[in-house]
Length: 257
Image (cartoon, rainbow, N blue to C red; front, side):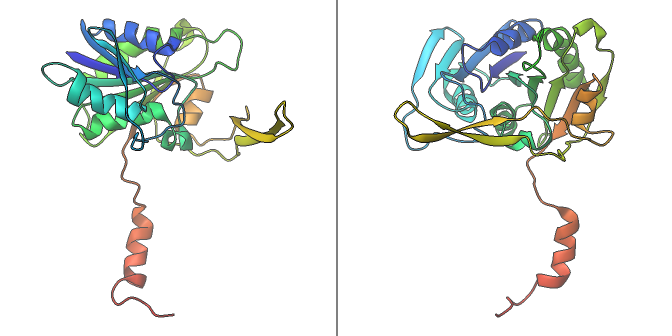
């Protein structure tokens, strides 16, 4: 099995090293194409206004100045010699990617680009890193078996798998839950106003460490309960109930003011 791995934390990230070790337990044909610099929050951005530079680190390892989406596109179409990858793995992200965050995540976007290119793709993220004692141990321990089982089961070609691992000791994690995407009932994103050394204001965007009250069966609830969350995602954002309702009210001749 040929595996392409990428991330949004950059080529030097500890999580990428963890993912390389995970991939090595599944295959000896592993390729790495990752951003030269951190691209967290890049979502599905493409680099259109600047050239993308590629730095060859070894025969199967490359760093690019592009986004995670760029990396997967270049990896599949230009950098990997021979047959296309059989699997794209993106991560392991430093921090969870769940609920509404998935629409902004460069990690999830890397997997989506793999899916768009016709390759089964999985995003992996490790909760924590704002708490003492956090490591990638849960992901490294449990990801190989979950990935192997997912590949055996299979999933539709327009779906990506989003796996989030809870914080804590790997040996204490006893359950995997297949979940739906949740939505927080608190606002965690904010911008802090600061002043630089020349007296000019700037803003630094970050996240408040607030917990919401998610429903059972959601990715958020599974992580809060110490479970591994596996969420099938797709990029059809159509809201079908509203679509069906609007068809009976707005279709036909355009209304006039």
